[in-house]
Image (tube, rainbow, N blue to C red; front, side):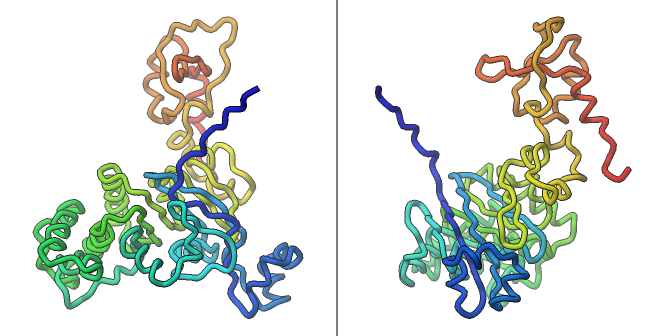
Length: 351
């Protein structure tokens, strides 16, 4: 009998058993099952060490927006810094395009940071004495690109992020949102394979923050970059993320799509996180469909299983017969008024 092996899905980043322990002899913690099993508080009391990231594993696919979220102190920002070795991991693997970068020497790491990935921080880090076009072109200048080449590329990404006409402005002449666009343009200018965002919009006013979230979505659609996005805001995570990793005390609690987190929370911690989320805005029809009954008439309209409940309300309520949920020609289930209204009419948490 011949065994057919299924090829593993492509990955840009593979993280395996990643640890970051701060403190004297922190490297001993991952090696000791007894110490590794201690809670954060117990570990501090016993060893004086803090495990900021504890045995975290995940993959990021090409073109994916992968969001890491958690409250303050959950380890999310330390994690993203470990992925680029701005913080040195204590143990584990960070495989980037097939290469474990924890084994990269300084020269190779510098090359990766210049050519393969870029970071966008909460604090923009713009050079105040340089105009927008010089700030955007700075990474290319460090890389050794000629003036004509780097300014041509800088103008391209300045237009891409909506800053056309501000090339000769200085950072202090721009609003916070516009400064963050400069930071985004600077990150894009080098055409990296992966963009890392460390809570880039948390210092912005709510309206500007929403505009910048929409800008990230638009840019992702236009340039298709792989993105790893750090946030403490669940609504931001649900809006941006193809998948979301929730962290607590340095550990991974759950990783999945937004509808998986809302529809099947792994524990009470995740359940509390998502309890105020309007389920109709997140859940898809696959979560609410049911098997056909003998008396169901199955010649109604069809919808796909990944249609969000909110977007299906009008079609389902307008149909005289149950809506069939179909994928690749296969009937997966049906949705009628009863199933739709059960979600749409849910009382808000705390009401």
